[in-house]
Length: 142
View 1: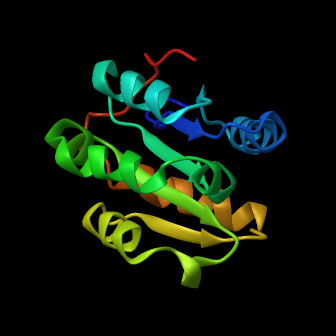
View 2: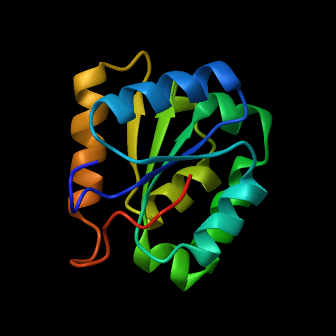
């Protein structure tokens, strides 16, 4: 990983989807941390010593309590002030209104699927650039 590149936390229960995202982002030079559940993601974010880009896919969100996860994120200033959020969605127009509100509060980027690999990497790079200066590094573990 190049110095100064933010780590990326991939939140996805499906091993195949998580592995593909891991490979794409690792090939682009990012340190990738994986969380299979919203609880694991929240636990990591609570103790993470630096800002991270959090990437959730709608495959995860469709099968879990996505609105509850993002409601917890929005309610915690540590989560909102230190991290950037991205969501992959096969149907952005079908995102429930409450979840849309939470994503808007987080200024989360929504990438439509199927996604272009270059667009995914560019969007992660843009999210990383919005992290507070000096809040990225190489100390995350995964």
